[in-house]
Image 1 (tube, rainbow, N blue to C red):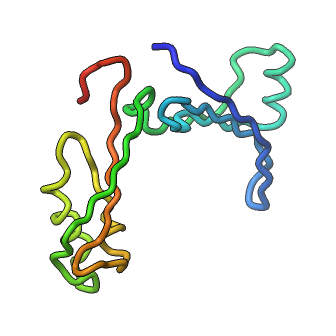
Image 2: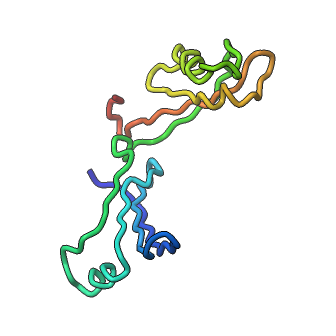
Length: 137
């Protein structure tokens, strides 16, 4: 798979560890920063001057959505619980389930934030859609 991506390189200064270089790779379609490398300043200098096989830390994130387009929508959802009750987050998740079809996922935060309109609130839903006519998972 070929993707359009952007590359960000930055120096991170810290008072809890040695300064280091962070390199991020971001997918242009999804907007996901899916790969982040961390290496010392000395190792960056070695890499830039042609030395190969430089050790670094690599963290990957959200690989399952790389290359996909994120869609969002907002719906007015009835609030069926008191947001102050002990299991409010669980109840919010349960309240969203009937609306989470075809890959859509709702924000429990939206149900818990207290911005209500006549026992309803606006909830943001999102899903990831494959490109080029491929079937969604």
